[in-house]
Image (cartoon, rainbow, N blue to C red; front, side, top):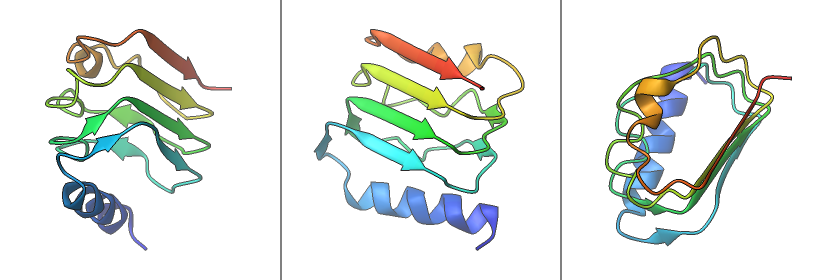
Amino acid sequence: MHLFSLAASMAVGLRAAAKVQIANLTISNCNMERLFGDVFRANNIAKIIIKDTPIREIANDTFAGVGEFLKEFHLVNSRLKTFPLGALQFLSVVTKIVIDRR
């Protein structure tokens, strides 16, 4: 599956769950290098864990719309090149951020 179609499939699945409270969303061993767009928007997600996924970039608008709900964000064993300060500015109630590139 191509990177773009994988991200699009994930976004469609999350949109189907819109307005539903999601306590913990875990993305593991997913072949995507970029988080972008409205993939998490319109969802009430309390905790996002992304692990063992080769993400290199998180776009500035990735957490727009979910920042008022997201309390924890974990990015473990990624390939992140730069700290995603622009994306994290939307996380208004976050209490824990873990970024581990290993």
